[in-house]
Amino acid sequence: MATIESFVGGAYTGKNPAAAFGTCVNWFPSAIETRGAVAPVELLPTPGLSTFATAPGGIGRAAWAGDGRAFVVFDATLYELLVDGTLTSRGTMASDSNPATISTNGDAGDQLLITSGGNAYVYNLTTNVLTLAVTADCLMGGVVDGYGVVFGNARILISELFDLATWDPTQYAQRSIQPDLWQSMLVDPFGYITLFGSKTSESWQNTGAFPFPFAPDRTGLMEEGVAAPFSVKQAGKHKVWLATNGNGGYQVIAAQGFAPRRISTHGLEAAIASYSTVSDAEADTYEHEGHAFYLLTFPSAGATWVYDFATEQWHRRAELVAGAWASYRPRFYCHAFGRTLAVDRDGATVWALSDSVYTGADG
Image (tube, rainbow, N blue to C red; front, side, top):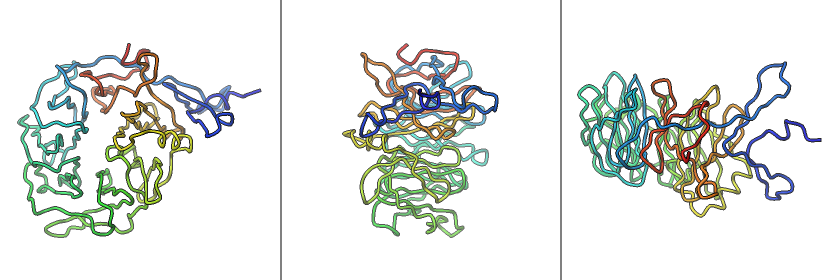
């Protein structure tokens, strides 16, 4: 007879369904951490969604919170999100089909760096003024050691120290230690700029050189490139991304420091290989009750896969549309006002995730 351990698990389908054919949609396994438990694992529902705020229109493209303030981007508009669910417009930007990115230089500069529509913008948190900082070739941004960093067109450009409004166009870098061009960038909390090529990746650090202070750390070269630029995210101590390399195929990789490891399964990799488009995959992360989740969505395929670092298992999240599973509507996350909030990938809603709500975005 099957035990509860063999029944309660994540999502995995093998090449031969007779050997393994398991799906787990909108539920996830969680370890029971006491010796007196009847079973070592339980199956928990993913959070329900309630409306926290509604924008005048558009779809969600970014969410960020810090120091008691929260901001979201819907289409071309930057909004400040208040504790009562009010959205206040803080300015408009160029917009495209890519996600926007938001980062900050903290209390030393009191600014936000926002990339949207190929441009970079700076938002002054003291004056509440949004201004254009860099035009063109700004796919994504970040801040490290007080410097703003924008990536686009296979190069990085840096701002003045603690001044995201001032950029010298001569202060840029392009790849030189490997032939494959950079496709994506992640600025991690540990002071590294990781730059992902199509086949390999590398990390840069602040060496104190003048006038351009950043240089590659050759010990940080990894043999995994990126298959989808916006799949790159920081999840706790790990940078995680949908990877590929010179041999082809797809894997989800998590790297702690310069040590990448495969966290995808053969079942997930077979599913990804079946999608007609994977380059548009995008990801975000959030944490809940000790579970750190990495959510990887394939918009063209209408699929969202979620990795739980606590159990090292995958499950799916989905909305039911016309009797079929579609990708999960919450897109980008922030923790603000004691809540986990997320913008809607298909509409103008800011969702609040809650264990006491039992409906999804479709009601």
